[in-house]
Length: 334
Image 1 (cartoon, rainbow, N blue to C red):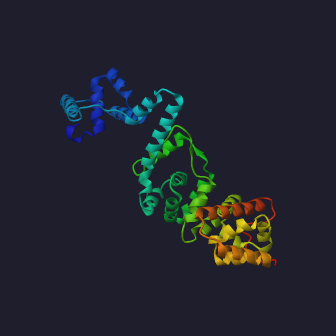
Image 2: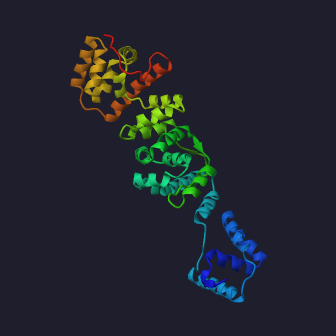
């Protein structure tokens, strides 16, 4: 045993053995279970400590005391205890949520600022569930870019797992944090996290490029047809109405008044407009055309809201079995 070859862990083990059992146990109280395990395993390998090694370890310890003089604290733990002791339960809960939220956003910033290809490279060897949880914490556009950079064999599995996520316990997040802490920081809070779900998948797939969404959903059908169909329905947009058969489109239009339809068509494609007009009476189509020409500037958010309300009508008719979304184009009924 030579002082030059001793690791930091070896020196700690030697120091604690020399201090004695009582002192060592008090120090263990300040260490994590993992740290205690590492130190005690190293202690178990020691059966003799030469006097010169003992003296040099103590000398190094005293030197370290001078170098690192000051107060060592667990800042996060201290802050949480201080907040918990604040008067007023409601204020204390608010401050704690604010603190946890701020800490989390800083930690997740690491991933959000990294290039998608780099993140994908870090994650591709992790378990698909871990990848799904990590992507669930990101903005949908960034998550979709990361997903597109993952190996083909992983994409569908990860997407499917995201759709199944609802809430995640702090313990699970903590395990992921431990697994990825060298590359990515994930912080656990005091409550279950709402991550993932079908809406998260819809957001990610709506932003993914190169038609990878089609490939992913087709592969997902092999394991869970119902889930793949549910995701497709959620991805349905106003412009997707152009793919419906005439009968289905007419059933939707019966539920929409002309003013709402005019607003929804304000930013619609010419193909979408013609599809709508083809499935209306000539008189109604002419009235809407005139109203569109006379319509002044309107807020984009108002138009999108109106389009979404029409999509919701289509969804309800699909759930009632009156139409079939995604059935493809057909002959219009005029």
